[in-house]
Length: 155
Image 1 (cartoon, one colour):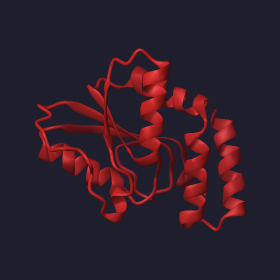
Image 2 (image 1 turned 90 degrees about the vertical axis):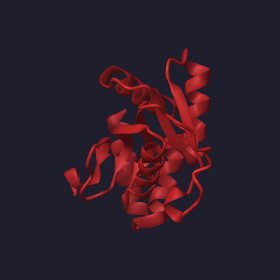
Image 3 (image 1 turned 45 degrees about the horizontal axis):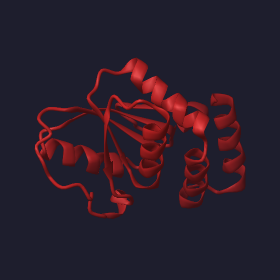
Image 4 (image 1 turned 180 degrees about the horizontal axis):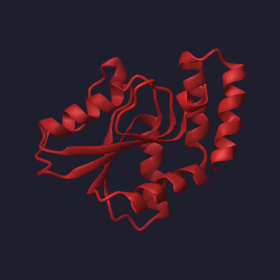
């Protein structure tokens, strides 16, 4: 899985000059790959002690469908709206999360704005964001983010 992801990232880094076009193409590639989604789910389930997943946007809807159709779900999935980094409403009714521990999953991590919106919502509703898992991490100073490919380890 990692080799395939590395090859696609390398291909897209040549094809696109970075920024939004690069991330849009990469995110679309990630969303259609069942094997990658399976690998992420397995990694999180094997390595983390948590209560529920939290996801957002197109990736979140794809993850939600994949998880509930291919697994016997043992974890709740909290699904937020997309484009949170652009100021969209989170789309989840505020409610007491009673100290539930969440893992945020996303296709890519760039500025951290989406994760920060998720974390703020969880904290305001008594939930806890334990960690984020992403396929591609393009942030220079990622904290508490697990990724399959971290740009600054290679470039």
